[in-house]
Image 1 (cartoon, rainbow, N blue to C red):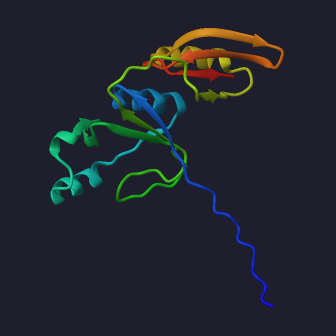
Image 2 (image 1 turned 120 degrees about the horizontal axis):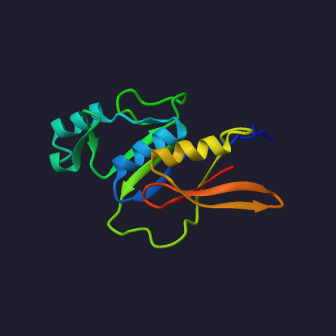
Image 3 (image 1 turned 180 degrees about the vertical axis):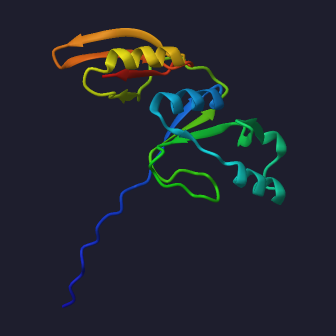
Length: 158
């Protein structure tokens, strides 16, 4: 009888994709909000253009670099990334252009945790970046502020 070694499952890599009208503006807002970095895909895009695998109209100039017109991601600055493509290999948000506008409450949202005693100053900072306060919630389990990013996507500040 042979024994099999138990296989340890490998965690699944993920990114949160957010539909939007203007990926570049959303990336700038969320990079500033989270202190993340906008991914730099310039080298990848130039390779794809040189190979004829990407039409020029699928790109835009963004922060003096080439970027994909319809999507851009932000990543945690401490996480690894692929140096050849600029793509993050850890915590990321990807903003993807869609033709339709947001019409209802988000079914998924981010909760930001700025730290003890810092909610008020964080709400003020985020408002300065273009977010709006929707309401303050006071419940038995806690207090938080519901906000909306520049395109109306809800998020909470704990």
